[in-house]
Length: 151
Ligand SMILES: [Zn+2]
Image 1 (tube, rainbow, N blue to C red):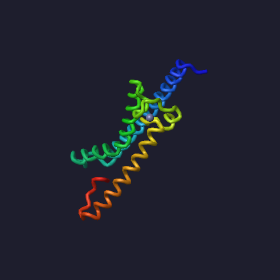
Image 2: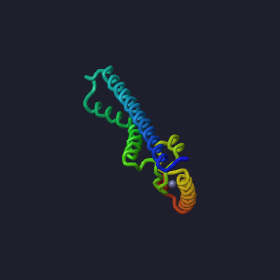
Image 3: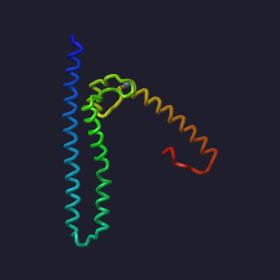
Image 4: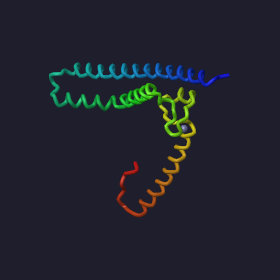
């Protein structure tokens, strides 16, 4: 028979496990990005820095920036989750305030909604999309200038 106290303790243990996993994920991501950047730098060296002017060097930096954008987003997600573990808001549904099931958090460590609220939200999104589609159809019929505000 699980008392409330042991349930809280097992939740705490679970969250510690999640934190370890997230920190591990982050370390791997940082490793990947670093080796990518190193490969880029070495690539530049091979082509001979003296033929490169400052402008193209800056352009390379910009390309690096774009290349690692996806990874940066991933790291941000991990950081957000770690922060939420620290302030004890992690694993609590943002919509209904109930604890999110551990199996769900295992499968989707970044989720902020419990399954019920997620399904509810997806249903609403589908309804909204249908509504937008209809509105777009009317708009296309009504005017010729195609704006892209709904893309
Ligand atoms: Zn919920």
